[in-house]
Length: 171
Image (cartoon, rainbow, N blue to C red; front, side, top):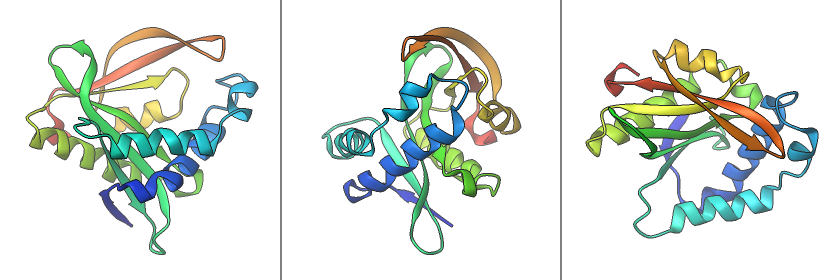
């Protein structure tokens, strides 16, 4: 497994992981219609934009398998919802289901934390949908409950929970 910064040519593979991960993770948490209507092509456009936008403060890392296939990704950047002391944020982290539980998620989270630290952001948040099994992952990484807020996805009311690290060297 290799973790590396993403490039524009990775947009389609990132989109495939994004859609597949949502469909495997959010069954029963999000309306079926939301999961059915996910589009790799629309996600590709989004990720391509993130990867090619000049001066974009966001950054993306990918996890590649031994055969050079992208099996996961993570993105991060400055915190979007001001909650001192947190200055950085892990925006997204997704892995194909068959590659979970192998340390790849931890390696991706570590890459994001290192990148944030290099930019002077030593504390990090991540928002996770309540009921998402990934909450246990963030707790295992040492994340502590910080806050929660309402969110509407596909017409369904949800709750997002924030986990935080005041020292990203601990990830």
